[in-house]
Image (tube, rainbow, N blue to C red):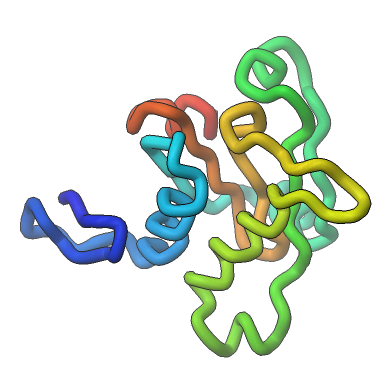
Length: 136
């Protein structure tokens, strides 16, 4: 199935992902990406996400896909969780890649993924199939 950037189905009969608002926000904010993947992880990874830790390079495979550690977002606020949770998940990712007083902006193609604190990983790439390869 295919949607436009506002989430309207334009092709197919299947229902969109429950994370559609996160995906469409990332496509709008990071226009160079062509594919986004999101998946839950196991118990060990869940505990790392809950603490907001980032993943450093774990070897040549990781270094091939990313120019730096996989960042982790700040935890979502209770207001964000109780409101437009899926949209706010995307906002948290975009904020993590934006420049701040403490750090330069992160290039989403140079670091093609992010852990959302307390939620899970999102990965992306220039082509539609690239997000899945990055997730591995």
